[in-house]
Length: 102
Image (cartoon, rainbow, N blue to C red):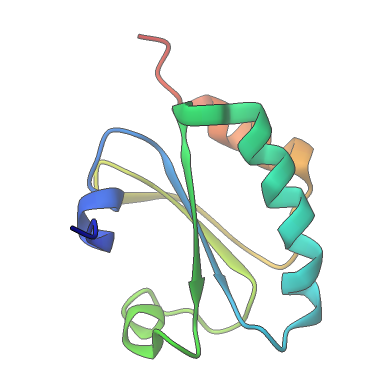
């Protein structure tokens, strides 16, 4: 059974959502950055990619104006939001603030 988006963002695991589009150049730059971050945080955080062209209602519900836009959720709340290309260092340090050391 597929896990629902709402279940993922409402969990205690920090979930970084990348709203992107296939035609977007900066979005393509984010791909290796996100892969690097995923290798760093492993299973302490989750990274999702949402194609805004395939999920327009979801993008609209979070007021996504441009891509790429990254949102970090924890327990259903948006804890951080950034549009444009973000470095892996910035993403790692942002995620580290929300990864529980329990």
